[in-house]
Length: 101
Image 1 (cartoon, rainbow, N blue to C red):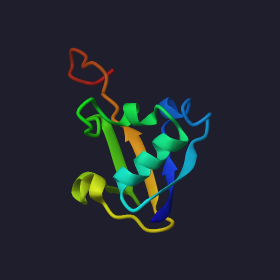
Image 2 (cartoon, rainbow, N blue to C red):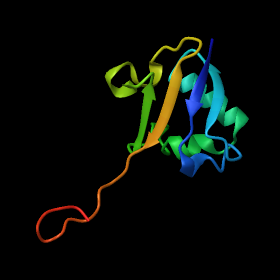
Image 3 (cartoon, rainbow, N blue to C red):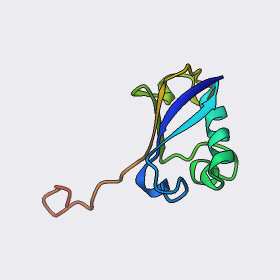
Image 4 (tube, one colour):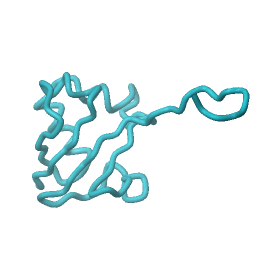
């Protein structure tokens, strides 16, 4: 079991009492997110949909590597790894010239 640092995006910091970095424990991303739910009840429902899948608009990185290109939630972790949880950001509406506002 690894102890890792998890960066929490601003919209979820109300669940972590305003803290932007927390520690989590687990051997995989899924285990760490389970640990975060035990520490900060309600965070799981913000990360996972009703079927238990990570929400499409949540991007997760381990040491700056997108877990979609690793082993997803089964990505193995070691002590000191950094996990970043980043909500996807949509662009603005296009203007008549095609640029984004």
